[in-house]
Each structure stands twice: as structure tokens, then as C-alpha cells.
Length: 472
Ligand code: AMP
Ligand code: ZN
Image (cartoon, rainbow, N blue to C red; front, side, top):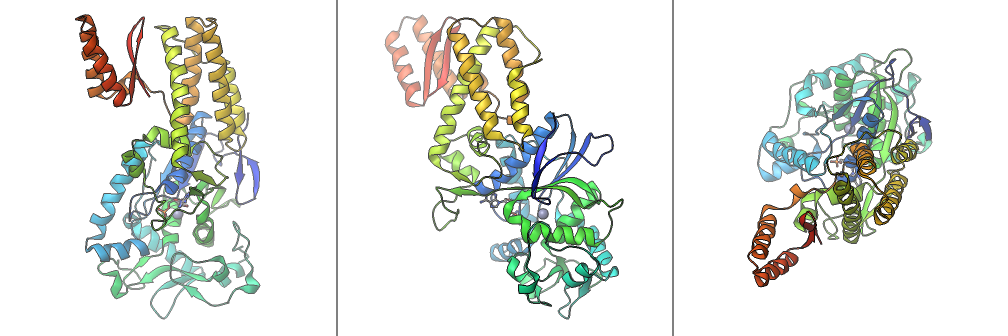
């Protein structure tokens, strides 16, 4: 079965085939965080989407090289460094560490490479030099170096591949120094920004004088250095299509490093944005959440991951706290079913061969990562499994095969199954105290402990195999 993905470059769903002649290796670059604050839940939607793409490619047997850059120097960071009177390194290091922690909390597979822009200065400078040599970039009177849209187009290249641009309405010869600008004002953009007093001590030497790189050139330089001038997949949120990704294409293809008529990137994927309670997230609207805000409210990384993975990546997703409660309920249904399967399977193990669950799951995700459809398959399987458990028609070997199939697809979903080990130690201690009280026939105390467990959000159920704890 072949995997089909929407390619922003062709604006159509295409069969995914890697550049690697053996068809096995895949190079994948995801634009990473700008480390000037904690990543918010919108950022996490995009990074979890990247994790889904990687996990699914690995599930399909590809060997993925996953690169996620760390933007550790750009306009917003410099502003915050100035405000907080810290050094660039100290300031960005704390948020980079927190970012990695959050990735782990959300059970995202860690990228193989997490290049920092500040560690790639010589590659960035070399790429700008190449563009100057080819006549596509020029130094302006302020000492900054700009990418010339006119010269690039004059070489027969197209500016405006991911988005449609109307050149008639643009003001020719204008320049933008800021990293972010609207498509209506598309103009020559900065590759190297000459040092200004507000930059403080954030600057590097270059052939054009002291300064720092623009944001877009950082990604071109790092992606091509690690994955080569042509690679398979480039991902980001939809807001990055323009100007960031458009400029990445212009810089990388403008440098002319690709061979055999290959493109800089074969396949571009963009994740739609996340809204909170139907609105754009903003601190002033009070609907701004980081992952740790949600953990503080008592939700788990697993619940957040599940919720972020419920909608198709090309659909805008409305995040709500009610939705997170719903995620908890859905996962509890799944956990209950898996728990029963484990009980029935006992010590029996099995392989997931010819599993209809795995087959349907694969068919669904092959269709442009139809994740909502895939969850539909999973919950239909839960319903059918529960039915068979209720009618006592599942033998240990069937249960073991069902569990093996689940594990196979969970390599993609990454929500795991809640296991006994996830019970916090203090809850387990209370459960043990209740068992001891019951043994001593102190039923009053046993009941009191049951109530205490309940008040802490745990139910205890006596089964033939002993007491079992369940999150309420
Ligand atoms: P940044 O740290 O701002 O560079 O953003 C990191 C990633 O998060 C980028 O791929 C953005 O496109 C993505 N992103 C930013 N805001 C949202 C949002 N509200 N929903 C989904 N993705 C977002
Ligand atoms: Zn980028």
C-alpha cells in the first residue's frame, strides 16, 4: 500500500516516494521552536503533527533522518535578551531545555539533529556568499545583505511557489529587514542584518561587517548542511508558508546547489493552526496555554497528545478544556479494554500477523494521514473487542494477538496504555494499606481508605486477581 500526502508545492495529494534510489531513507526537516518563551499549545499541535509524520514513515519501514532546528537568534529573541539583561546563550538555553522536556512529556520521538543557528554561522555566511557570487544577493548602503527577488526571477526561477503572489501589485525595489512580512509587501528580504545598537552584543563578524543572519537563511543553511541540497520532506505550521518557506526555497535554489533537476525539497507539508475556544490564542484574551499550564490543571501529556492528534492536520483545530476532558474519557475506554485484554492474555504472547486492525489503520493513514479516520478504526475495534469479551469468546491467544496488533499501531499513535506503574506511589501505598486493613478485618478503616482514594481521583476494584486501581 502506498502512502499519499498533500504536497503544498503541487497543491495536490501525491504518492510519497523518497529521493533515495533504494526507496528506504527519508530526510525530513521540521522548522523548530524560536526559543524565547515556552512553546504554546498551538506550537505543540505542529510539533506533534511532525512526530506523527515521522512515526508513520518509520512504521512504513522508512529510515527517517529527522532534523528540527532551534532558532536561537532572531528579532524577538534579541528584544527579550535586551529586556531581561541576560546573555543570548543563557536566555535561549533555558527555553531549549524546557522545549526538550515538553517533547518528552508529549511522547514525541526526539529528532536526530537539533541544530542551533548560532552553531552554523560559517555555513550561513558561506551560503550568503554563494548568493552574492551568483548575483542574486547584494549589500545595501546600511551594510545589510538582501536577497534580490528581481535577479532571482531573472534567472528563470519562480518566487511564489507555495503561495500565489501578484507581482503587479507589489512595489518594486522595496526591502524588508524584519523576518516577518505580509505577502502584499513581498520585497527583497534580509539575509544578513548589519549590527545596530539595539542588538547589544549579539553579533558575528562577516565579510560584510558585523551583524547577524536573517531567520530564513538559517533554515536553508542548516537543512542543506545536514540533509544535503535536496531532501524529501519539509514541515511547519501553515503560517510559515510565506514568507519563511518561500524564502527558504528562493535562497536554497538560488544558490544552485541542487543537481539532476532536483528541487530543494520534494514534498512540503503544512499543518493548519490551532484555535482556543474558537479564537486565535493570545495572552490578552486569556486563552493562551503552554503545555505546563495544562499539566498544572491536572491533565497529562498523554491526554494532550491524544487531543492534538484527533483532527486531520490540514483542518483548523479548536482546542478546548472540555475537549481535554473528552480525551481523558476516550483514553479511559481504551485503557479499560487493553486492561481486560491483558488479563485474558495472561502470560500468552503473539505476533500481529494479518491483523485487520493494523490493515485498516494503515489503509486509513495512507490516505494523507487521515488520523480521525484511524481513531475511528481504533474505537470500532475497542467496541468489537469489548463485545467479544462480554460474550466470553476471547481466548488467551486471541487477546494476546489483539494486544500485539495494538502495540504495532501504537508505535504510530504513541499514546501507549496506562499501566499499573503509572499509579503514583502515594496512591499505591493507600491501596496497600486498605488491603492490610481488610486482612486485619478492620473494614471501617478499609472503607475510609477507599473514600480517601476516591477523593484523590482513584477507584479501587476487587478482582479475583486482587485489588485494581482505576483513575476516575
Ligand atoms: P515559532 O516558535 O513561533 O517559530 O513556531 C513554531 C511552530 O509552531 C511553527 O511551525 C509555527 O507554524 C507553529 N505554530 C505557531 N502558532 C501556531 C498555532 N496557533 N497553531 C498551530 N501551529 C502554530
Ligand atoms: Zn524554518
